[in-house]
Length: 435
Image 1 (tube, rainbow, N blue to C red):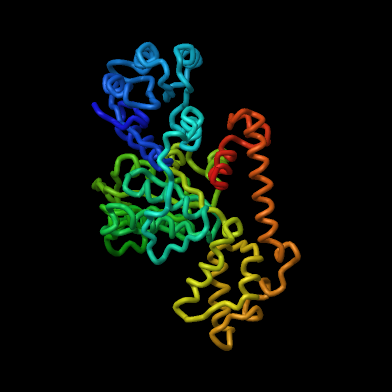
Image 2 (image 1 turned 60 degrees about the vertical axis):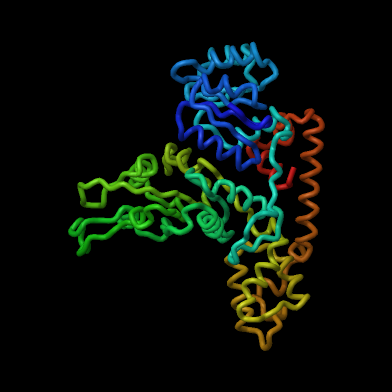
């Protein structure tokens, strides 16, 4: 077996789990080598920089592989993965030389952070946007969005489910479209289901279809969106609005590809890639019992978080110019300053509405400050200095993170505790600031 000298061996007897972990690590810039059992893991060990190792596998178990690895290749870091957390197993694994021990379903951010800690980022391929082909509907000047698009492009050709998170109006559908268009499914349909606008009694019919006579008003047979998108992508917008009663059936089609139309007994199979989006905190919804935990984990295989417009001011003017381009309008310098100073609580959607209104109000081809909506014409002192304040705050937070890492000798978990935030939030901030 040959492999790059700098790679991560992903060892799991379940193919879906291997592919899921590899996709996450590839998107983070790592090279991976997939192993289906303990024998393949031992063959791969001399060629790898780190091993992700499932504990419970048929044949040679993970703990047996660990023992062999630590005898023959003692410097190779091993991270154990298991769905069956047992304190005795954990103690045995650490004593046997495991670098760390993570529970399935694996949190992707925690996985990447743990691998980073073990390897120090030394084996990552550089995440670069220079090779990205930007479709005309994608406007991305800020470093935050370009980094997000690099990850989106890397996950595009896999079949794993992507969960796009972000405030209302940030452009989650644009990211979903970019993923679909960057994938091998681009020639097939991408079907959008708006879970937030469908009445509860019609959601199941919209997603799965219905047979004639299934309910009052069902005068004809109807195909659902999963049927219509076969071979392509289903985009579930505002998936947090999905009624609790429908969630088990939705989970089933995600796991098996099988479903029945409402009022029917025949079982259909569909082969689709699912991308979901939400502006809700689904983890909080799970805790409150309004969203199924198993469905959340099935959706949250590869999370992408779109930052609000106020956190990426470099995108404001390019987006405004793009919106106005077809109408051949341009912005006066004073108008540009107002646009950059405003906080945009409605994000890109609010910017689009403001530009469309300004185009109607303008007397010529130049958009002046008094053509803007009233809330933009007289910004507060905070808004007027917003770009400066945002820049200052980013630098303050960046320095605090660097100081915390220095005080804890680079330990991300201890640095997060020192700053009083969760490890996951700390990892997000490292990525947002390009650190």
